[in-house]
Image (tube, rainbow, N blue to C red):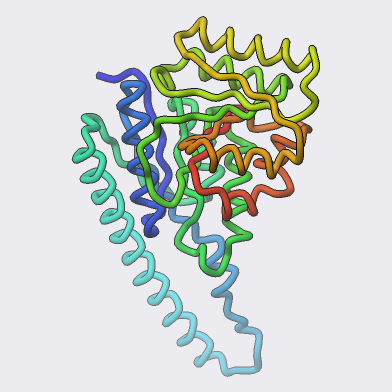
Length: 288
Protein backbone atom coordinates (compact mmCIF):
# COMPACT_ATOMS: atom_id res chain seq x y z
CA UNK A 1 0.00 0.00 0.00
CA UNK A 2 1.33 3.42 -0.95
CA UNK A 3 2.48 5.56 1.97
CA UNK A 4 2.26 8.77 -0.06
CA UNK A 5 -1.00 10.47 -0.97
CA UNK A 6 -2.09 13.06 -3.50
CA UNK A 7 -5.15 15.18 -2.73
CA UNK A 8 -6.94 16.11 -5.96
CA UNK A 9 -9.68 18.75 -5.73
CA UNK A 10 -12.51 18.73 -8.26
CA UNK A 11 -15.90 20.27 -8.90
CA UNK A 12 -16.51 18.16 -11.99
CA UNK A 13 -16.31 21.05 -14.45
CA UNK A 14 -15.10 20.42 -17.98
CA UNK A 15 -12.39 20.35 -19.14
CA UNK A 16 -10.42 21.07 -15.97
CA UNK A 17 -11.76 18.15 -13.93
CA UNK A 18 -10.31 15.65 -16.39
CA UNK A 19 -7.04 17.57 -16.38
CA UNK A 20 -6.89 17.45 -12.58
CA UNK A 21 -7.35 13.66 -12.67
CA UNK A 22 -4.70 13.25 -15.36
CA UNK A 23 -2.16 15.43 -13.54
CA UNK A 24 -2.89 13.61 -10.30
CA UNK A 25 -2.41 10.25 -12.04
CA UNK A 26 0.90 11.42 -13.52
CA UNK A 27 2.16 12.58 -10.14
CA UNK A 28 0.89 9.45 -8.37
CA UNK A 29 2.80 7.17 -10.69
CA UNK A 30 5.93 9.33 -10.43
CA UNK A 31 6.05 9.22 -6.62
CA UNK A 32 4.18 5.94 -6.06
CA UNK A 33 1.24 7.50 -4.25
CA UNK A 34 -2.45 6.89 -3.76
CA UNK A 35 -4.97 9.55 -4.83
CA UNK A 36 -7.79 10.98 -2.75
CA UNK A 37 -10.40 12.81 -4.81
CA UNK A 38 -12.02 15.63 -2.86
CA UNK A 39 -15.30 17.23 -3.89
CA UNK A 40 -16.60 20.13 -1.81
CA UNK A 41 -20.19 21.34 -1.89
CA UNK A 42 -19.91 25.05 -1.15
CA UNK A 43 -23.35 26.59 -0.70
CA UNK A 44 -22.05 29.98 0.43
CA UNK A 45 -22.26 31.62 -3.00
CA UNK A 46 -25.66 30.03 -3.62
CA UNK A 47 -27.00 31.48 -0.41
CA UNK A 48 -25.72 34.92 -1.32
CA UNK A 49 -27.00 34.91 -4.88
CA UNK A 50 -30.25 33.15 -4.07
CA UNK A 51 -31.26 35.18 -1.03
CA UNK A 52 -34.95 36.08 -1.01
CA UNK A 53 -36.26 39.20 0.69
CA UNK A 54 -39.42 38.25 2.58
CA UNK A 55 -39.74 41.54 4.40
CA UNK A 56 -42.33 42.94 2.04
CA UNK A 57 -45.94 43.58 3.02
CA UNK A 58 -47.44 40.21 2.11
CA UNK A 59 -49.93 38.28 4.16
CA UNK A 60 -48.86 35.86 6.86
CA UNK A 61 -50.43 32.88 5.08
CA UNK A 62 -48.76 33.78 1.79
CA UNK A 63 -45.40 34.19 3.47
CA UNK A 64 -45.68 30.83 5.24
CA UNK A 65 -46.61 29.15 1.97
CA UNK A 66 -43.66 30.78 0.23
CA UNK A 67 -41.27 29.68 2.97
CA UNK A 68 -42.55 26.13 2.70
CA UNK A 69 -42.07 26.13 -1.07
CA UNK A 70 -38.55 27.50 -0.69
CA UNK A 71 -37.72 24.80 1.84
CA UNK A 72 -38.96 22.13 -0.56
CA UNK A 73 -36.90 23.68 -3.36
CA UNK A 74 -33.77 23.71 -1.19
CA UNK A 75 -34.34 20.06 -0.34
CA UNK A 76 -34.63 19.12 -4.01
CA UNK A 77 -31.51 21.12 -4.88
CA UNK A 78 -29.56 19.47 -2.07
CA UNK A 79 -30.52 16.00 -3.30
CA UNK A 80 -29.53 16.87 -6.86
CA UNK A 81 -26.20 18.28 -5.66
CA UNK A 82 -25.49 15.12 -3.66
CA UNK A 83 -26.27 12.90 -6.65
CA UNK A 84 -24.10 15.04 -8.91
CA UNK A 85 -21.25 14.83 -6.39
CA UNK A 86 -21.46 11.03 -6.38
CA UNK A 87 -21.34 10.94 -10.19
CA UNK A 88 -18.36 13.31 -10.23
CA UNK A 89 -16.44 11.15 -7.78
CA UNK A 90 -17.31 7.95 -9.64
CA UNK A 91 -16.12 9.50 -12.91
CA UNK A 92 -12.87 10.57 -11.28
CA UNK A 93 -12.29 7.08 -9.92
CA UNK A 94 -12.84 5.51 -13.35
CA UNK A 95 -10.41 7.89 -15.04
CA UNK A 96 -7.69 7.43 -12.43
CA UNK A 97 -8.07 3.66 -12.42
CA UNK A 98 -7.88 3.60 -16.21
CA UNK A 99 -4.70 5.70 -15.96
CA UNK A 100 -3.08 3.04 -13.80
CA UNK A 101 -3.59 4.41 -10.28
CA UNK A 102 -4.24 1.40 -8.06
CA UNK A 103 -5.40 3.20 -4.92
CA UNK A 104 -8.15 5.80 -5.23
CA UNK A 105 -10.34 7.09 -2.40
CA UNK A 106 -13.38 9.35 -2.78
CA UNK A 107 -14.36 12.09 -0.33
CA UNK A 108 -17.27 14.52 -0.42
CA UNK A 109 -17.66 17.34 2.08
CA UNK A 110 -19.78 20.43 2.72
CA UNK A 111 -17.99 23.73 3.33
CA UNK A 112 -15.43 25.84 1.52
CA UNK A 113 -12.57 24.53 -0.60
CA UNK A 114 -9.93 26.39 1.41
CA UNK A 115 -11.15 25.18 4.81
CA UNK A 116 -11.62 21.61 3.59
CA UNK A 117 -8.19 21.45 1.97
CA UNK A 118 -6.74 22.73 5.23
CA UNK A 119 -8.49 19.87 7.03
CA UNK A 120 -7.20 17.15 4.69
CA UNK A 121 -3.78 18.34 3.54
CA UNK A 122 -1.74 17.08 6.49
CA UNK A 123 -2.21 13.55 5.20
CA UNK A 124 -1.18 14.53 1.66
CA UNK A 125 2.19 14.98 -0.04
CA UNK A 126 0.80 17.04 -2.91
CA UNK A 127 -2.38 18.94 -3.71
CA UNK A 128 -3.71 19.09 -7.28
CA UNK A 129 -6.27 21.71 -8.28
CA UNK A 130 -7.52 23.10 -11.59
CA UNK A 131 -7.04 26.61 -12.93
CA UNK A 132 -10.77 26.97 -13.51
CA UNK A 133 -14.00 25.66 -12.03
CA UNK A 134 -17.60 25.36 -13.11
CA UNK A 135 -18.19 29.11 -12.82
CA UNK A 136 -15.13 30.16 -14.83
CA UNK A 137 -17.12 31.77 -17.63
CA UNK A 138 -18.57 34.40 -15.31
CA UNK A 139 -16.32 34.42 -12.29
CA UNK A 140 -12.67 34.18 -13.29
CA UNK A 141 -11.88 36.80 -10.64
CA UNK A 142 -13.52 34.65 -7.95
CA UNK A 143 -11.66 31.59 -9.17
CA UNK A 144 -8.35 33.40 -9.15
CA UNK A 145 -8.96 34.58 -5.62
CA UNK A 146 -10.10 31.13 -4.51
CA UNK A 147 -7.08 29.41 -6.03
CA UNK A 148 -4.73 32.01 -4.60
CA UNK A 149 -6.17 31.41 -1.13
CA UNK A 150 -5.52 27.68 -1.46
CA UNK A 151 -1.93 28.29 -2.55
CA UNK A 152 -1.31 30.81 0.21
CA UNK A 153 -2.92 28.71 2.93
CA UNK A 154 -1.56 25.32 1.96
CA UNK A 155 1.38 23.80 3.80
CA UNK A 156 1.92 21.32 0.96
CA UNK A 157 3.12 21.76 -2.62
CA UNK A 158 0.25 22.68 -4.94
CA UNK A 159 0.13 21.50 -8.55
CA UNK A 160 -2.17 23.78 -10.56
CA UNK A 161 -3.38 21.76 -13.53
CA UNK A 162 -3.54 23.36 -16.95
CA UNK A 163 -6.55 23.13 -19.26
CA UNK A 164 -5.46 19.76 -20.62
CA UNK A 165 -2.74 17.35 -19.57
CA UNK A 166 0.26 16.97 -21.85
CA UNK A 167 3.23 14.65 -21.29
CA UNK A 168 5.72 16.36 -18.96
CA UNK A 169 9.28 16.08 -20.23
CA UNK A 170 10.83 19.52 -19.64
CA UNK A 171 10.66 21.36 -16.33
CA UNK A 172 11.50 24.98 -15.53
CA UNK A 173 12.41 26.09 -12.01
CA UNK A 174 12.10 29.86 -11.63
CA UNK A 175 14.82 30.71 -9.13
CA UNK A 176 16.00 33.95 -7.52
CA UNK A 177 17.96 32.71 -4.52
CA UNK A 178 15.34 33.73 -1.96
CA UNK A 179 14.50 31.44 0.99
CA UNK A 180 11.27 30.23 -0.60
CA UNK A 181 13.02 29.52 -3.90
CA UNK A 182 15.68 27.52 -2.06
CA UNK A 183 13.02 25.56 -0.22
CA UNK A 184 11.41 24.75 -3.56
CA UNK A 185 14.70 23.43 -4.95
CA UNK A 186 15.32 21.36 -1.81
CA UNK A 187 11.80 19.93 -1.85
CA UNK A 188 12.01 19.03 -5.53
CA UNK A 189 15.42 17.46 -4.99
CA UNK A 190 14.11 15.17 -2.26
CA UNK A 191 11.10 14.03 -4.29
CA UNK A 192 11.14 11.49 -7.15
CA UNK A 193 8.57 13.64 -8.97
CA UNK A 194 11.02 15.22 -11.44
CA UNK A 195 13.80 12.65 -11.53
CA UNK A 196 14.79 11.72 -15.07
CA UNK A 197 13.18 14.80 -16.62
CA UNK A 198 15.03 17.60 -18.43
CA UNK A 199 15.31 20.40 -15.87
CA UNK A 200 16.13 24.08 -16.42
CA UNK A 201 16.84 26.57 -13.63
CA UNK A 202 16.10 30.11 -14.79
CA UNK A 203 16.99 33.32 -12.99
CA UNK A 204 16.06 36.74 -14.30
CA UNK A 205 18.34 39.67 -13.51
CA UNK A 206 21.93 40.85 -13.55
CA UNK A 207 24.37 38.04 -14.26
CA UNK A 208 26.83 38.79 -11.45
CA UNK A 209 28.93 36.64 -9.13
CA UNK A 210 26.27 36.49 -6.41
CA UNK A 211 23.64 35.23 -8.83
CA UNK A 212 26.09 32.70 -10.26
CA UNK A 213 26.76 31.39 -6.78
CA UNK A 214 23.05 31.05 -6.19
CA UNK A 215 22.59 29.16 -9.44
CA UNK A 216 25.51 26.86 -8.65
CA UNK A 217 23.91 26.07 -5.30
CA UNK A 218 20.62 25.24 -7.01
CA UNK A 219 22.08 22.96 -9.68
CA UNK A 220 24.43 21.27 -7.20
CA UNK A 221 21.54 20.62 -4.81
CA UNK A 222 19.49 19.08 -7.58
CA UNK A 223 22.44 17.05 -8.89
CA UNK A 224 23.16 15.66 -5.41
CA UNK A 225 19.62 14.31 -5.46
CA UNK A 226 19.92 12.80 -8.93
CA UNK A 227 18.47 15.64 -11.04
CA UNK A 228 20.64 17.11 -13.77
CA UNK A 229 19.73 20.75 -14.37
CA UNK A 230 20.81 23.43 -16.82
CA UNK A 231 21.37 26.89 -15.27
CA UNK A 232 20.27 29.92 -17.30
CA UNK A 233 20.46 33.61 -16.38
CA UNK A 234 18.55 36.12 -18.49
CA UNK A 235 18.14 39.86 -18.20
CA UNK A 236 14.92 41.71 -18.88
CA UNK A 237 11.38 41.90 -17.61
CA UNK A 238 10.67 38.78 -15.56
CA UNK A 239 7.17 38.35 -17.01
CA UNK A 240 8.39 38.50 -20.59
CA UNK A 241 11.54 36.45 -20.02
CA UNK A 242 9.77 33.58 -18.29
CA UNK A 243 6.93 33.50 -20.81
CA UNK A 244 9.35 33.50 -23.74
CA UNK A 245 11.54 30.82 -22.18
CA UNK A 246 8.57 28.53 -21.57
CA UNK A 247 7.49 28.95 -25.17
CA UNK A 248 10.89 28.71 -26.86
CA UNK A 249 12.18 25.75 -24.85
CA UNK A 250 8.96 23.76 -24.91
CA UNK A 251 8.63 23.71 -21.12
CA UNK A 252 5.83 21.43 -19.84
CA UNK A 253 5.87 22.32 -16.13
CA UNK A 254 6.96 25.36 -14.13
CA UNK A 255 8.15 25.09 -10.52
CA UNK A 256 8.63 27.95 -8.10
CA UNK A 257 8.43 28.98 -4.48
CA UNK A 258 4.91 30.00 -3.55
CA UNK A 259 5.95 33.20 -1.79
CA UNK A 260 8.53 35.91 -2.14
CA UNK A 261 8.93 39.57 -2.91
CA UNK A 262 10.85 39.34 -6.17
CA UNK A 263 9.17 40.05 -9.48
CA UNK A 264 9.62 36.43 -10.57
CA UNK A 265 7.41 35.12 -7.82
CA UNK A 266 5.02 38.04 -7.91
CA UNK A 267 4.59 37.07 -11.57
CA UNK A 268 2.78 33.93 -10.36
CA UNK A 269 1.47 34.53 -6.85
CA UNK A 270 0.28 37.87 -5.56
CA UNK A 271 -1.53 40.70 -7.28
CA UNK A 272 -1.24 39.05 -10.71
CA UNK A 273 -2.32 35.55 -9.67
CA UNK A 274 -5.65 35.60 -11.49
CA UNK A 275 -4.05 36.88 -14.68
CA UNK A 276 -1.43 34.14 -14.64
CA UNK A 277 -3.99 31.43 -14.00
CA UNK A 278 -5.93 32.69 -16.99
CA UNK A 279 -2.98 33.10 -19.38
CA UNK A 280 -0.33 30.53 -18.48
CA UNK A 281 -0.67 27.46 -20.68
CA UNK A 282 1.33 24.96 -18.62
CA UNK A 283 0.82 23.46 -15.15
CA UNK A 284 2.41 25.25 -12.19
CA UNK A 285 3.94 23.50 -9.21
CA UNK A 286 4.13 25.89 -6.27
CA UNK A 287 6.21 24.93 -3.26
CA UNK A 288 5.87 26.87 -0.05
